[in-house]
Amino acid sequence: IPALQTKILAYVICGVMAAIGGIIFCSRIGFVTPMSGNGYEMKAIAACVLGGVSLLGGVGSVLGAAVGSVIMASISYLLVFMGFSSNYDNAITGVILIVIVVVDALLQHRSIVQNRHARLNARVSPKATSEVLAEQIADFGEEAMSPLGKKGGVR
Image (tube, rainbow, N blue to C red):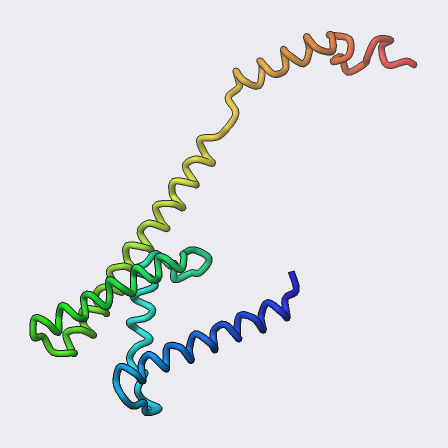
């Protein structure tokens, strides 16, 4: 895999998506200032984590992140519809993020414990070892398994 070309392509795609997002944001608000996007990073992270993306990386999907963003937007619109202040929106986003982080940490801890127990319980029993040895003796004969061989160690 060509690392440099992949990295450049990732930055190009990211730049194009940021431009599209900026155009959509500008069309919705009507104008844009350099400070217009402040505060959206927590909502974006919460939406991705809500969609199943791990904070440690390596796990997640675009579809899950999209579903998480739809859920977060629905919560924001529901709070506005109910007449709550935007401060409540930020507080609820923070609570959702904290709950998801705690649940993710508990699930990862549980997975680690289960893997540890599975490794400890995967030991070979003595009976199985003796059965394997008996099969080897039957396959090769007792003389082949003897430490001295057929002729008592003399060739």
